[in-house]
Image (cartoon, rainbow, N blue to C red; front, side, top):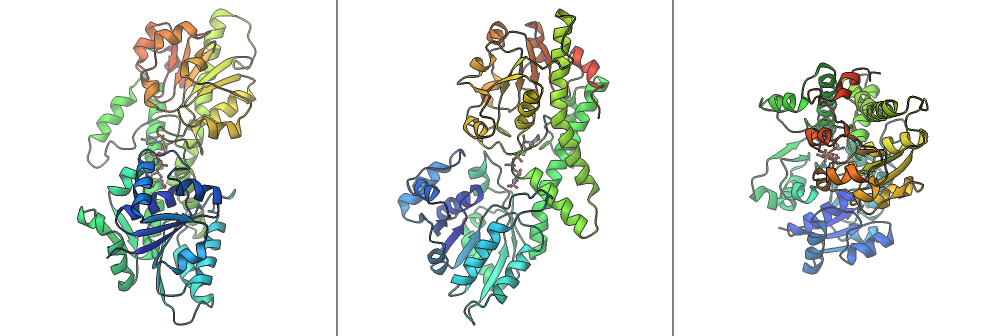
Length: 464
Ligand code: UGA
């Protein structure tokens, strides 16, 4: 039987949960403290860019199974299942900030009026669901009114979130009561019907599955990034290395794409939180700590590569150049989002690159199909361009920082005519290096030690 569900917090995870659970046939009310966001959502517009989400939003608003409100208390009282989907941002010490979660738990305690299943979808430190259970039990809510706490981590990828919501690899449910289990089976009946595997487990196990999964994927990326750096030094092609490694079923080809380092709102935050958890329990997570450090270095390495390219180009033509090769140069950065198909710039490698360029005294022109508005809130002083070619016009060098499809087919002959110097750093290995070299570009990618690129011989010098 379909359920009445309140989804508390309508950020990224909450919006997808509200829309997706309504599409499964449940009746959902999305709750957020931000009135403007609620108005936007009720008007059928998504506050975030995510392919497909607006279509599902409108469809479910039209069906009458979905609405949004700021009245959290009323939504809680009229729903049997409460999904907690507030943000848990990273604090300076690496721990997750649970302020929003605490506020929601407080509102639940004040409004619980009948049996509820309280489902945590936010990524929370191991032990948080147990804490929610104890806090509500101790809160003096109406005596005799029962509730259960369930941990249901989400594994959506930004840019593919609708697809991931409706066709997940697995659904993990930490649930320790048969009453709550029957209700969760109803909530997710639609997934059961398409044979999505369910993992039923304890609360702490579900919480750890989420962190361990993200930390493993982040480690996999850092691993291949370091192999890519080594490939540059020894003259190997990391494309072939990764491809052949991925053919081993035990390794799998996924998340073996090397580049400028991982970003986004999840991997950096969740790896840091996992390491903190390990420290708290005196179980040092050395592998994850190293993956984090390698990622940080990888982001820095992109700037080092650019400096080498630019200084090489300029010493060839001008024997005396400033000791900082980027000073006074105009650099075009194509791609600001942390990955393609999103407007999210959190922890994006482009942030590090642009920050470094500005510190070096370079002028920066940028383009991104979706993320310029978000980026301009942090860097209002740089030039935002309507097309990649506007950004390239007159630039001394270009950095490709996000793997948007439109950059894959960049018109290199046109770029070679409009740029002031022909220098490209392709941090996502999107371009054909042979074409770039034939057009006279000084080109560098990541892990391409065997493309006849002079930079590959010097890149082994980029070590920290
Ligand atoms: C990640 C996980 O993939 C999701 O399963 C999880 O639900 C989500 O975090 C979360 O915890 O909410 P997301 O951050 O949206 O999803 O993006 P990914 O596609 O995982 O990419 C993360 C970063 O890794 C990006 O910067 C991407 O460019 C980079 N990446 C990814 C690589 O550098 N190489 C790869 O092979 C894959």
